[in-house]
Image (cartoon, rainbow, N blue to C red; front, side, top):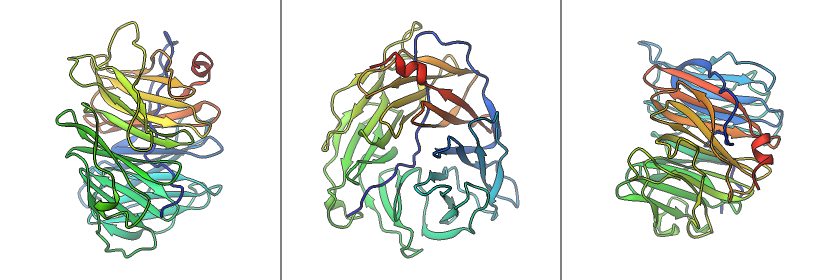
Length: 364
């Protein structure tokens, strides 16, 4: 049985309050796509992404460390093998040991892992441990859980490099995974049509055997959703589809068999947002952050909660943000974190630091 598993998907950041002070200008990280981010105990954010494609160079795997006191970070290639990950984002985990980082990347046609034991100063050579592509994932102590459309795969770091066993679950479309405190992965998949559903592993038997998973449980209709795991369990953030240009942001907690009551994020003065990308992060102390792009207004907004049940009024993190395909965030115990996203039409990785301490003081 899998034991405690750390969520990689990393956490997507956004803040929320009544009217915010002037929104911060986004920080340009580099040219590329598919960013992921992790936060270490010192508050340093570790960002990975795929560099823009170039003939002969493919898409190098880029990395930068952004200390809490720094204004920006300088990316460098940590894997440059001429391969292209075909728009699949890398995954990154910080810890559990001090200075430890693990990065997983799809490098056509294999999946590789690189590690650092010195906070990103150096990395190991790429080690292959599987084949295929994936969209999202979550780390465990001995491997990584990968999702692709309806498929779920558990890759053991020590397993055969050619192992391609997987289980087909859920609805066709986006699929994300988070891990419950008892170590069971919870899968959410689908789209507005025919809807998003959840499935959970039983905790017994072969994790890549579909008979060891629950039946799909219907949740809602949504094209934009994300999950996070942590001390308060697994939580889902999504936008309620079918409201024209106004989709309410909803948060639910996984009860052990299904996602429970809907907790709706309050509306800002300008009414319902049109959400084009969303992320949710859970801090080690159990507080929460949800961040999204408000499409018509081309800006990143966020909301925060102490327990996941009551949420602050949305605030603006930054403006002038268009054509996002992926947004992620991380949040620390001190209420500070980082949000990172890609503007695919412009091939730019951008980020902003966030401080949600004021918002947490106003939210029960």
